[in-house]
Length: 197
Image 1: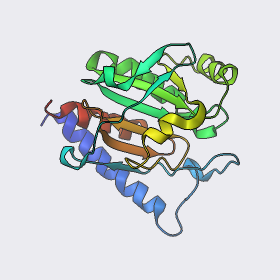
Image 2 (image 1 turned 180 degrees about the vertical axis):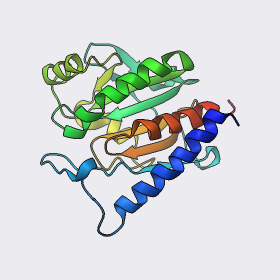
Image 3 (image 1 turned 90 degrees about the vertical axis):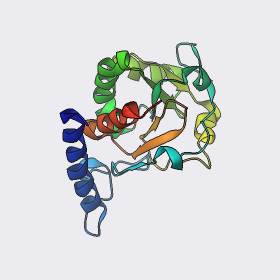
């Protein structure tokens, strides 16, 4: 194991302990920083992972991005996929957007794809968000919440935002509820990238 991987694992351990403490009685149960806002269900930033032998079937979904691009997850097999469920008026979605852009820029050449999924906004609202934060990756216009339904029975999507990491076979390897901590997300992505194909 490389020094980078050991450092990331140690950091994940410290962050996990902090997240568990935040979930304990008396800890914060709202959005990161203790903020609560109407209109969305806040996650606490907690994450879950599944080992390769615990993962179920590949998630199947085809959708259309706000720019009109057709996206089929099946064609992305062989890459690690980070799916972020968001909408424009969600405060933690706005806070985490620069971190997701940075992840895309840093990992694009390493076989990692990012895909946004927006089950709430019309095209104008979503595209204004994408312009504001210079989002370089596609986001699906998930009218009717079909992408959300694709995860039903696979992994609960209990908050906005929720971020899911799919392995190279399209199976759920990890999930973060609420605003991502960039170090945690990068550690999860690194772990999936390090798996033997």
